[in-house]
Length: 279
Ligand code: BMX
Figure: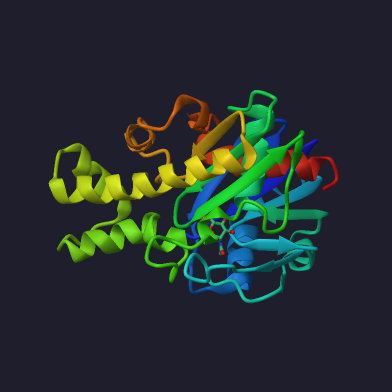
């Protein structure tokens, strides 16, 4: 069964025709942050019009909290979704097929568990991107609701801000600006690789905070592995930097970090699988 799978993140939106774990075709468009959910759905309908008639079901993996088909932001700085937006109803009306919706990182956790880096045991997935998302698969089941929203735990600044606001892509760009460099997160990584001390310091600080989070996650769920994804998490050198920060952790406490095998497509593949089963 072919599924239209859509992943709406704080920075970009990906849509794909998916069969099993195979991507038949895909497009990526920026998430027009100011357009709001009606605007995002219209952009998706437009840019996937050429696939109409080729899919029987639709899956949405979205940044934010999904409950009973209703969609809300937990951290509006990551994406300003209005409270309780009727995502499933609106998408179904617009695209004309049954819609299943879930959180992006929870979908990615399922994708990696079933088709990617998973080994069959318990797994935690972390995406380090605009924000920090997470998903947990325990005893072969993906947890839903708030479970895995690790980016929302309190950060290092005396608990004032969510961890993701002091760690992730937006923070990296903001820190660079403070250091006098008006660049996007991706360029901070490039400059760090070239050896710029200011860039290296920012990347190292971010990786240290995520490494500390992984250490805590290991104590909560003892997963077989923690799968790292997202544009920041998969940036060259980031996972190695995390491993460096974990070097002095006793082996029996140490989290086992692996890169997402499905890369940026983990959410798409995961939600397609769950939508294909009928949600
Ligand atoms: C935030 C939260 C999570 C999401 C994570 C990663 C919102 C809007 N989103 O913690 O639901 O999984 O960001 O999202 O509250 P991304 O946009 O960085 O992929």
